[in-house]
Image (cartoon, rainbow, N blue to C red; front, top):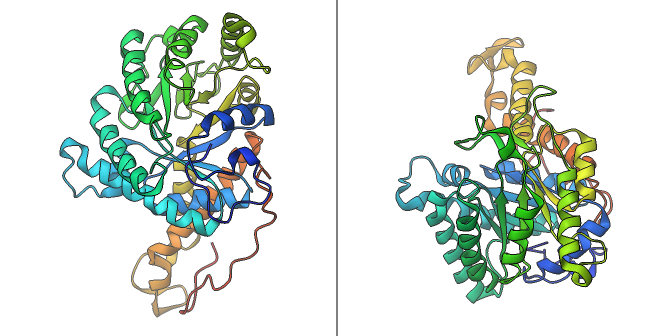
Length: 390
């Protein structure tokens, strides 16, 4: 499930993953459900967040999915840039993709480069990224990105499917996978507010999922389905979110019956995506994996973990962060090493790596690559006095 595999391929990475192209998605999808794990997908808005994801992946000896939303892409490029025709968002996502590729070589972990929710009005953003991948493909034989999500769940299902077919046709030529959404993911994320949608919109029907599967398979098998089974964006109080993972199981059974002898042996013809994974019960997560979920989006929890790291850092060193000079050690003592942004950002990264460790455990996605324990890094403090304990 990888657009990019480092040149030094992990020694125990399954042979189906051993090619440096994205053109073997279908083989990957046939392997992951049988292995019983799903891969965490994290929305990133900075290179610091990306580095935390890569560090977590190496620490958990597993792959990672790094993804960008249109708003996150624009922020990555810089909010001081004009975003007419989504040009800042396009440039930001491309810049983030090159950062991922550069640093993944150093961490030695396979990475899937993905873009999140692209509503109908945002399609020019994806058009720009596809053009970038087509240019990259001409030079390197693989696309810049691994996959893109087209989210037309608010449109009529027939229009949703037809537009997705058009994009899948273009994407399949260079080995990019399509993630499409069917039904509505509740809550609010990145400017999209579905918190007031009727409850029935949060649950997909097996017949609809089969309709999607049947039509997209005419083009390619390189697609996943973000079906709705009560999932929402954000974290809510217990009892406010009722997940029904068995919707996915019923859909797999329904489609397998329709396929008859052509159904796969495991009776899981559809590769599902779990949106709104933050705050979900572990039992629901692992039940969904059993029904063919291979990817789970984690945004809200990692946003909190990043902020919590900064918050805890400020609490710990509060008295050293009020002025440039003067602290409990003396009125003339400088505080530069405390307000150096690298210190609070590193605290945020460390906290995020720890939170992603929990996600990796919940998704049964640990010790996948066979890389072994992470050796302590050398020379991490740099030539100056070094960092603070975070």
